[in-house]
Length: 185
Figure (cartoon, one colour):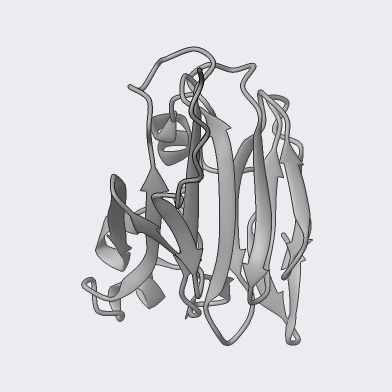
């Protein structure tokens, strides 16, 4: 006879922080974002140990495992370097055909996307917004508000991250503040 049981989940997210056994927390400071901002003079005036964003990840499968899923929550802090908003590093996936979902939890920002032909566009992020990121599309997020921007993500465990290509070539457009409004330039 099969025994039926009810269990309490080992993971939870509360106040936009992922908690539980196996959660990995990583942090990125402005010093780790060298080269992604256009205005190097403004960048050099900021404290390199200033926290730009934190990521809480649950990675239950070994990286590269087909069919597995990863889950994460990012907290991106407000700020600007010159007229550019604080942003994540941005990446393509190593497995080009792997897609991903992002969804807004708290705050305001923009999901910046770029395809292989270097066409760039942005989608507004806010609580409840849902964003499908197709395979072959680079993505990064910028905080356009005055408070923390929190968003969740779900991606395949075999997607991998290709940060190097973005570090070398960047995005074809930048999200900047013009007269108090975010604009792609």
